[in-house]
Length: 144
Image 1: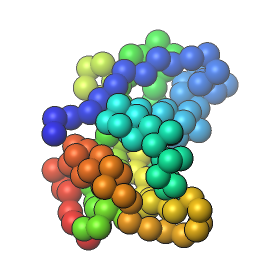
Image 2: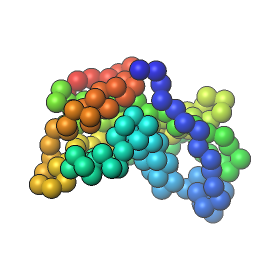
Image 3: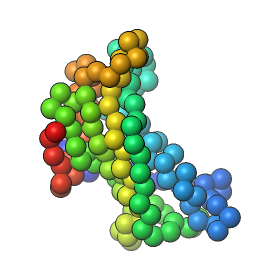
Image 4: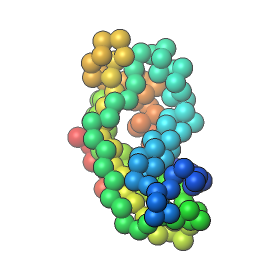
């Protein structure tokens, strides 16, 4: 699959007292882009509810490379960096890119799928497996 990237508008409320993007806004924006990918590829909240599964996050880490200011135009690209063969666990990288291509931040999230009735980790039903399997892969992608 080709790269998945979306532009993000920086709001006043996303800024900190230094007038650059506050650290927690990176996490919110990355989640918005990841969830947008899922929604656009058929894994809507209604489907998650009907199929009784959803994503759970174990670890999320952001490395800040260049500050993002209020006037910057940015986009966020997502790519899978690691998948279990049964698609039960995954790692996704979010790349924050300035309009000129400068890499401003790298946010990595590690997670899994959870059965929302049993409240236990599980392999996803086929719609979840297909959606994550078709997510763009990073150059350093590995199967676990």
